[in-house]
Length: 113
Length: 115
Image (cartoon, rainbow over all chains, first blue to last red; front, side, top):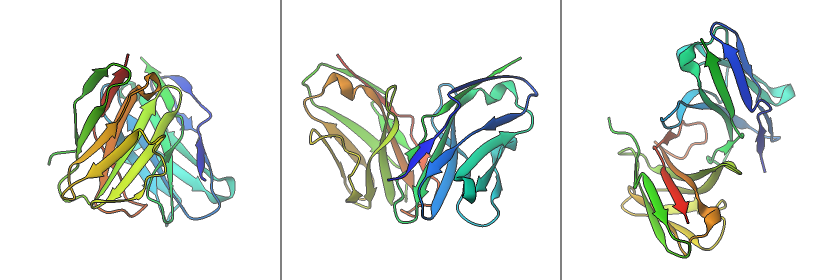
């Protein structure tokens, strides 16, 4: 069965700092990779996804992620965070035939002014 | 348009009681998913519906948990004889179809507290 690891559990950054959140998965076959975000008091929403093509994907609000197949990684990046990026970020994977999502444990990002 | 809705938003129950949680997916979405979000376990998949059928029930933690979907739309998740470890936020998501590369749209969740 597939699994997802997010090694950063709680990250605190100042506004304008650069962000990189790690995500590694374990599965040997075809994968689809997602980053979801949960802002305080709101429901989960999609930031970006990768399923084929260019391994560098761009999402909403200036976020991007790079799929590195050899490293089984899909790290999330943003060059300059804003206070409004304070949220919990979840990496998730689905495999070729099964559409259920397997989530990582989440990373809580706190951006200070 | 309207997103995924869930009811109730909060449910407090006593240990041993049965509860029913409801999910209304986005209109026209054939795929519907239930997940559970708890402090100890993170976000876990429970069950997947394609239309009214459930081809993947692998995440249901015990036979106290069941779910159904009618008319290819509304779904209910039933937990019988609730236990304290069932306390969690139950999330519903829907997708236009069951393809694994599609985005799943999540509802606001039902927070279940078992006393």
